[in-house]
Image (cartoon, rainbow, N blue to C red; front, top):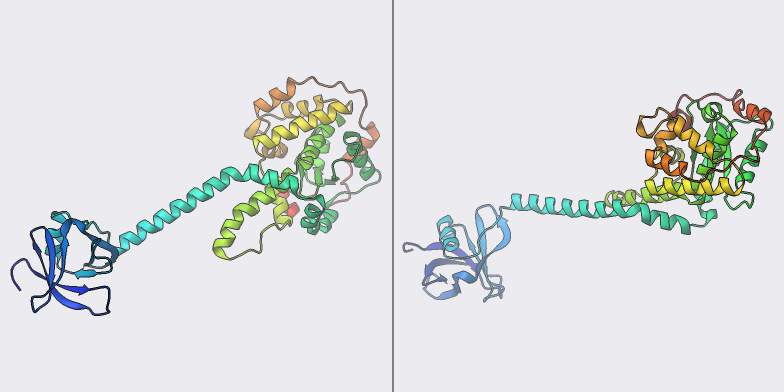
Length: 364
């Protein structure tokens, strides 16, 4: 073999034969010859490119003018000369290429997840609006026994709750069931299926019945707009990506105590809170109930995340929200919601029910 020549392997693309041959650079071409001197290939160097498959120090060369043919080179000097004269041999070692492909796939997956994360709230809200109420109740039917075991009952309590709901929604257009639970922190939240839970702490710390009805109107508005179901759908959408990836579909669209806890402690979007505020104000105003109660509750208990009250941590009372509520024409109370005796019974409803120290203890 002469100077500047290298041993290569040549495949013509038509047979499975692997020819041991000699390669050299001649007048701007890669020339491949057999041992007997017969020319197997004469490729213009600028048309030579490296195949993307790499095996250690071995480089597989192709030429656009001779599709199907392949020259396998392990001579580093020949490869360097080819690159210097214009052949497209950048090549990424197999391991690095795999890492780059993996990173690209991860970035693509991240972009898809990011897009889904941005679109999910609005998309899930639109889907929730179209889910029949019967279907939503079936999804949350597993919570029925759980709710019954943990709610407070006392003479006149259920009747008082029904009367408050009937005052706010006399047409029964909102399918909601309201219960009192024995938790000291002031809280109220809507669960999928129309269940609204009001804590003992909220009943005790509210200054009057107007505050209770203001908060209740806010939660009924969440029920009306299916915000809790939208949260479950959004979680299922995002979780579904992982379920498809991992092959585990068991947790999709399951409304169980864990889902209830997640829903109770979720932070609604600004859009959902604004919608619930607007719905509450409309509901209160139409029924001649003071709208000042909700404003007073928010203003007295602080703003945003600094508040120690659980209701405000899950329904953050930003200054903008309070300002918006305060600028509305506030209805003067012309129709008291509850007499003092009934309000007292509501606040004592949980005396015979074991208290939960936290929402987590309540749900698990």
